[in-house]
Image (cartoon, rainbow, N blue to C red; front, side, top):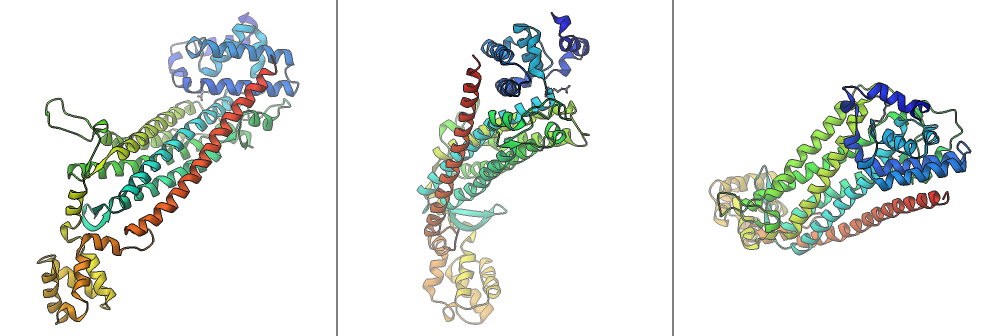
Length: 482
Ligand code: ARG
């Protein structure tokens, strides 16, 4: 029968030689097996509805697709890629009529529809990972609004803050990653099917219908753009690389905090040494930190692969896709591990309180107190800087006052105000500007954060439900051909 199926003969002639393995994407395509079956089904249903294939032909092809699905990926016949292999499986099962499945399309629009279809699932996973991570950060923050800690700039003690304020600084960043992923989702969720090789088709296809059957929001209009663009992958990986970069910073913070005894990781997120029995190492966080390397190499690999590609389809694109799968997997896993490490970490409040005032970290608060009493801030800064050369207590400040102002500090500000500014807890409590670390201000941030998180959870839940509903509807449609 193969003699009648020109496609099969052609594939053997062109890709059966020594470069067969090199040409093949079968390894990476396992990821889009289910997606390809869905795309095939939607396409066949549309072809039947448009009268391009008969109902009986559609019925036969859809039946063969179910057999291919039941047999599983590993049972697929040989093929250059999953699309060719599934088609061969269908033709093997029902004969040349199976070749009608590929009417009015090309592997070029087919593959990119599969990528978008599958990527939607992955994006939902990534979104859910960001939500779970944010939950963990918010939960821990709720418990530590009063837990003092040193805050750093340049890794030098800077100003005292709280663990909650530190945790919510990461929540804010990850919330923007959720936002970026949601935004990227809306552009991934557009359907290229029906673009064919790049130049459309003379068949009277209904692109809106296949988009609908696959649960896509809309159709990607220009057929040359639709079949060739991979900008949506850049967007998604770029966002994941942004997230991975944030994660790496948080991991680094926690590794430093663990080193100083501020935080103790749960044993589940630590490792030991094969030789040094006393060791408890923050290995999971080191791997989270390293994932930024995976993500940025994914992004740069993808961009380098895409750079300078002429219109329209080029086989380079086959090697672009795996960067997306690898990055999505690595960053989702790292996000989930980071969430677990945060949720189970124990904060050593005593050590943190001691450390919070180290390195005269209350100096800025003292300068602020002097400025609030009327001194120009620059003069106050100079006075405190001079004091810092000899000490970090009231006496040092008073001596500096004599030197800079020619009179004792009490001429400007009551001693209690300075003593209060020198206390790390009071220092934190005084900084109650919006978004600041004072417990009351953090409570305000927490309230807004919880509301935003709940709204994002609802949005992601809606996407998950829409995808499930679309898959069910397609199944129903297919069953109507039985
Ligand atoms: N496997 C290919 C990919 O991943 C799709 C096949 C398109 N092949 C072609 N010769 N036009 O991009």
